[in-house]
Image 1: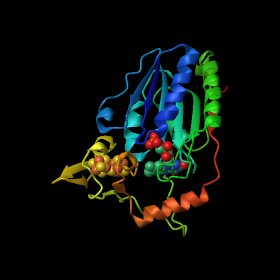
Image 2: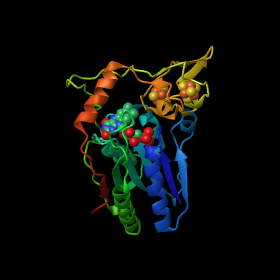
Image 3: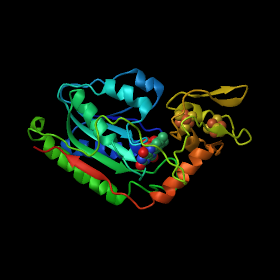
Image 4: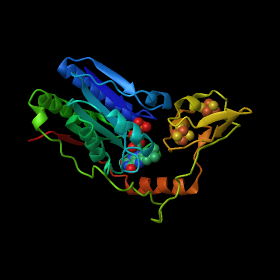
Length: 273
Ligand SMILES: Cc1cc2nc3c(=O)[nH]c(=O)nc-3n(C[C@H](O)[C@H](O)[C@H](O)COP(=O)(O)O)c2cc1C
Ligand code: SF4
Ligand code: SF4
């Protein structure tokens, strides 16, 4: 059985993880199980990895690494006894920096055997142009070829092989977002706001927040807890009532749209001697 675990506030990572999981399942003739750890209640349980399981772990890149607020869960969850594993990160056409190395490193430290690692380009949730239409057909064909290589490795003595990926397994810092003038963009504390004239009180945004930070009081939305800027609430809102208006954040979005508009390619790594 293949067990696919994913964090995917806006669905880009899920789309890629599902493509890879289904492909591996078809090639191996194995069942595939999907497990989200996106919502707070989903992170109350740890994965149950059994002896014959192949693990696929998928996460978006946030500031060049595994999203900070999920890191503790990922560290505790990636525990196994020599199970083969595939690391998958998605990134919004800027860069994946240390995220893949961090994930592969945590797999190894937790007793898994990474047999392959992939960094796929997806839409950057901050933007309507960056990574738009990704993954495209070419990306998915490359992911299929990667799946075939992973299956080849699974049929060899993979425990003697190592998957080498670029980046640092134990990075000291996160990527510092910049503004259009190249100064650091300080939007760590930025939160979304809701235009109550557009809000129909449907409650959809409350259900998708990975931090459980959206509430309602006296018929108005409240954004009281931690906000990781994942954009799940904004993208999910059917009436466009949610926006990020923080000027530092908006300047960063303008900067990345301008600087990283050339399409990046996905990257793949398989275990070697
Ligand atoms: C807080 C935050 C930080 C991000 N940092 C990066 C980054 O460093 N590099 C990059 O290329 N994309 C970055 N992205 C874009 C996401 O990696 C990308 O949009 C991903 O597909 C989102 O996954 P999801 O659709 O599963 O939520 C960032 C997104 C967010 C919300
Ligand atoms: S409030 Fe912040 S963390 Fe919650 S869904 Fe919206 S952007 Fe994501
Ligand atoms: S999803 Fe949009 S319309 Fe629905 S409660 Fe949230 S802000 Fe209001």
